[in-house]
Image (cartoon, rainbow, N blue to C red; front, side, top):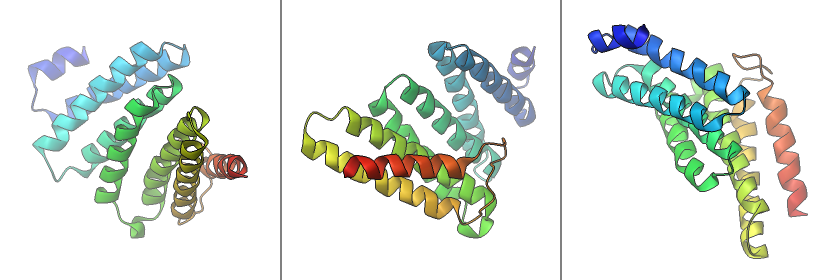
Length: 186
């Protein structure tokens, strides 16, 4: 129904947002069932819509934020599939979009958005370190993971609210991941 309505009114940003949100919900359902390929298809549809909306109205900060979140969602999906090299550019793109859109004075949202980006980047570096062919690469990747996790912690603690908007304890995830990366370097 939303697809038909959106197709009939392609310039209606509100309908496009609703369609993207519905695709995102489908992606979550398929991911929870372990169907990461199908989830990925819906996430890419979501991203395409937000990319169109952001391009159509550069002043639309919500669409740019949603585009960045969709980059991270696709990257996290790829990380679950051990496709780190495919995920890394999306994480960096999401991080760049969040840093461009926000500023530290925004408090909570800056901390959550940029903190999640660095958390994902740290996770990607850790995954690369775990499969690195040489000890030199492994050490460098773990150092990158630690640096990313430290950035995540520093930024996330700008607003120490423990839970993000979904009720998830992002700070605990960051601290756990940082401890694991630091331990791997010893």
